[in-house]
Image 1 (cartoon, rainbow, N blue to C red):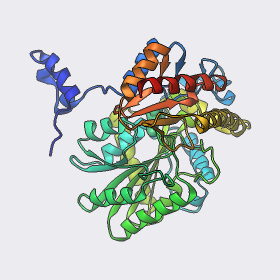
Image 2: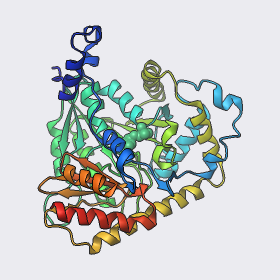
Image 3: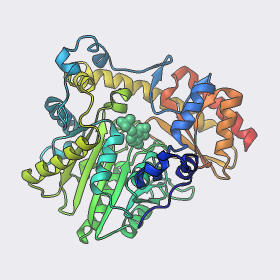
Image 4: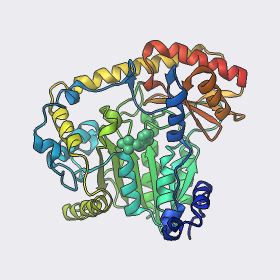
Length: 437
Ligand SMILES: Cc1ncc(COP(=O)(O)O)c(C=O)c1O
């Protein structure tokens, strides 16, 4: 089964029709397009958001990207070898080893389990894309929450010709809001294709900023184990882009990879993570894929990692050497953890400021705040739609950049806004909502 050509690709194809370009494009080339999502809205904000730009998933301070001094101070001090030479296809061995140690530190349950050496990929996007190349068949569904990072569509449906099967992230109703685990389980079961199912878990979630509580994490693990017990083979991809930014007590503070690594012969857990957001190194393009399959042998891990290396080699050959070298120095620096803690403290202050404002804000009846407790973002849901009109109004009348999703959600990247500006940002958003709503 082949996907239809998406409308945006069709528009581009119409422009190319009659030229040699169109005659030469492959099926893939004909299907491809540049989505009108976060990237194009961010580009608009760059032009018009002269006051606050709360679009992009980066952390800013005083108009500059935040950074860890233990990364920055090495920029001028790297040896030529650390900058100019090719990195090995799978990544610089020292970095792979150091990152694995970090993964174990953050996910203590895997200390005694079998987990592959991480593979270096050019950012988390590439990590997900490599996994999709390796595991997603044409026509096969990939389960994601209905609140998902839009690039999953381009990777899974656009690139691989799979489909996205979505489930509502949150339970309906005004009772205790939380993850809709029934819906997740049902959607996984309905998405079994040739005896297997693929699920992407992204916590802290983009765009909502939600992470599971400890109880939810345990329940989620148990439900997936029950499905695996029935003989269904599960690939669980953990997109841990915003890992570590957990602001509330009671939140599960490891990756779900911690629960699903090496626990069941029918589960392959693949962790995608990196310094991009965690270590404030967005432009470095250094991410990791780490595998764990219940009961797999050392030889099998090596074979799997080699396949991953083949996928990397075919796409990008190898990843940024300077980025990897800087990360090695940073992780080995004595102040690395302390500096990460300072960045965390700053983002947590912003989070708490947003929470406090929203706790006493009078929202229009048709607007609700989606649950959030972690990460870079929070999102409003406009129950009757109009998020795009609200975004445009904020952008063109107030000089404020936000992201609208499906005309129903407005995502605000509070991590990109200085603490002292957060009250003004939300005052403007709430005032514009009232007029729009
Ligand atoms: C959920 C999620 N996954 C992955 C990424 C991509 O990370 P990278 O810049 O390392 O490719 C992002 C970035 O916005 C994200 O929000």
